Length: 112
Length: 116
Image 1 (cartoon, rainbow over the protein chains, first blue to last red):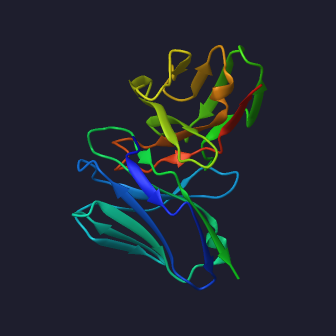
Image 2 (image 1 turned 90 degrees about the vertical axis):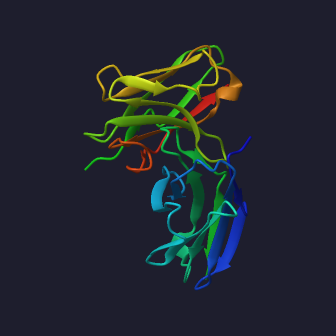
């Protein structure tokens, strides 16, 4: 049973456009929701994270929107650039010291 | 400073052989994690350590898989009697500790294991 469901599997966005990736979870005990970015040949790297006490967090062009009642959260990339082309993973964790669980990933391609 | 270092970068082995994958975490990082990542999938948790103590090994697929971190630094993931289904990217990550929600994971570039 997949604990974090991510969509879409792949995404193509024009340069300057908005990229949106969605995740849904079932376990209400999760209390930390990070997004990781992975470039080919590299390991995933933390991009941005949110806790459920806020509905939105913004860092530069990257924003997480969080809907606690719907158990969903999403990553928005504003003014998408070709350098943003990568695979993005959402993840979830609860403070019961269980491991971080990842979604299956979204391959983003930003085309000029 | 240096990131998480994994070796070898690639490992090809014949079915039935044992393999040992090495992880050298970022200096000072208390927690060390092993994940497995299949092609086109997200990382799947295997096991983790705080210092030298193995805290959780619930993700290890079966008893052919084991891990150790004897001195609280370098860790080795060992797969005995490898099978073709073990072929995957094995990733190590480390963090300062205090739970993954308090300290982000820093992943290595992984070891690509191919069992023929």
